[in-house]
Structure formats: C-alpha cells, structure tokens
Image 1 (cartoon, rainbow, N blue to C red):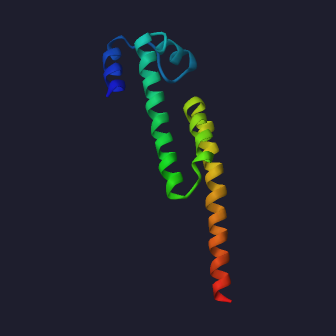
Image 2 (cartoon, rainbow, N blue to C red; image 1 turned 30 degrees about the vertical axis):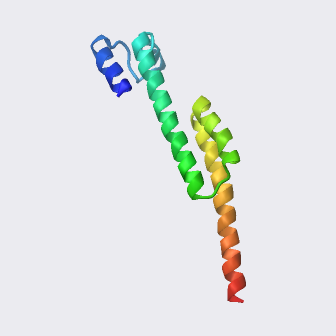
Image 3 (tube, rainbow, N blue to C red; image 1 turned 60 degrees about the horizontal axis):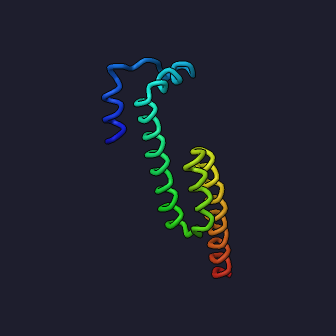
Length: 108
C-alpha cells in the first residue's frame, strides 16, 4: 500500500523511464520515487524470503542452511534466490535418492 501511494503521488511529476539506465537514474533523482523503489525492493525481498522459509520447512531443510540465503536475498536479491535453490536441490535431491533406495530395499 505504501508503494502504491508513493507511486500515485509521484506520477504527475514523473520524469524518466524504465527503458534505459539513464531514464531510471532520472526517475530515482526524485527522492519520493527513490523511496517508492526502495519500498518495492524491500517488499519483494521480504516476500521471497518468507517463501524460502515456508518452502524449506515443507522440504525439511535445516534453518541454519536457509539463514545465509535469507541474508543474501535481502542484500543481493537474485543471488540469495539462486543460493536457496542450490541448497534446496541438494536436500530435495538427497531425500529423493534416500526414498528411492528405501523402496528398492523393501522390494528385495
């Protein structure tokens, strides 16, 4: 809601664009637009972080492996998202192999 309110108030004075780096720099020269961008960043990173925690709990990934990913997600967005998926793949893949081995052992 904060983001929407900030952007709605800035639109009449909107200078710049999202199509070039110079255009984005011009947008963020407006302090209110900069605040809107920062709010957008924080809201999105917090959403992704909360998803990582819920997903790790569903997949029984120890929290100590998730915490560094959460820090990376907050500070460097995509790097934390990729790090989480690497850790997730290791745990989900390992569990799948263990499960398949148990089924084979029961069948023999």
